[in-house]
Image 1: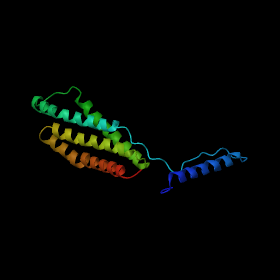
Image 2 (image 1 turned 45 degrees about the vertical axis):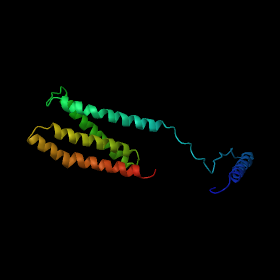
Image 3 (image 1 turned 30 degrees about the horizontal axis):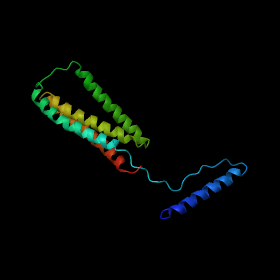
Image 4 (image 1 turned 180 degrees about the vertical axis):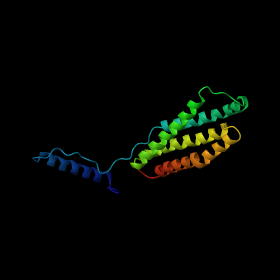
Amino acid sequence: MKGRAGGERGKTMRQLVSCDDELAGAEGFDRAEVIPLHEEAEEPRPARGRRAGWLLVACGLALLPWLYVLATGLPATATAAHWPVAWVGLDALEALGLIATGLLAARGDRRHALAAAATATLLAVDAWFDTTTAAPGGDFATAVAMALGAELPLAALCGRLALRTLSRPA
């Protein structure tokens, strides 16, 4: 239909409808659904997405002064009442993310990109907090070994899966 004038396109659509009416009168045929051969271009979406984008940028910029407050005001050490729960919870989320990403990818489901992106983020956060909260010596060496040997390579793999899938057309 490309390159045809609007009147010609309307004529073709009328022919399809006429053909549909003839089929509907024939015995044993139900009325066929008319499927347009040429879809009109969608109207541009409202600027809601753009507004949300600028709101997120503003919130990110508003956090910048807060970083200074945290850097200068937090104590050098702290005690957490539920320290094991925090770490077990983070690692449980990583395990769920890896399992979900793997199952979705194995099924060929494009939604694995979402699970992969979230899992990559969790793994990178885990590596960061493992290394920055580890005590000097053996604990720190173990944290670095885990970050370099497992968490960051898995985060890179998940990130690559997400980016590769999202860069392909559906």
